[in-house]
Amino acid sequence: MGVGCKLTGAEFDSMVERGAFDTIGPRKIELIRGELRFMNPAGPVHDDHIDYLTRWSTDHTSAQDATIRVQCGFICDDDRPEPDVLWLKPKRYGRTRPTAADVMLLIEVSDSSLATDLQEKADLYAESGVAEYWVVDIPGQRMHVMSHSDGHHYRHIEIIVPPNPLSPKCRPSAILNTAELFEVPRE
Image (cartoon, rainbow, N blue to C red; front, side):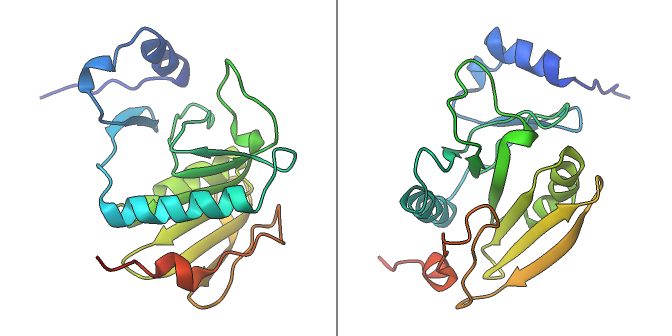
């Protein structure tokens, strides 16, 4: 019988700084609830949705409004998730990772990880105080929009389906065209 070992965020950060994960190649890893978790490689539809959201994010913000990060980690209490898109308070983060208090909007694009994104990660982000969390549900062709954390869970959960538009609370003028988002180009 094996014995598991939980890591702290500080231990994970130290391992990253020392290059402990350099040998795993292009695979990405997160620290969630003290466990190292390999992230599933993204497919073309997942990547297309991230590209669309990245363009939308940068088109609707300036450097004075938000810092946009794509597939980068942040400090979420003792966890180190790497969400698909982050809208952060506008500044350069230099030698430190942003914290949950810096996150204005967090977006996960989900094609194979929907249950984890809607349950475990939603609770994790709510517990750490992330103000607004969106899950792009590729198979369901809908957006799960969560806000108003009570410190454990999001109290306000809304499902947006195309063609209904969506805007982040931190920037209501940034209107996301959900019909376009879910329209995957044919080859």
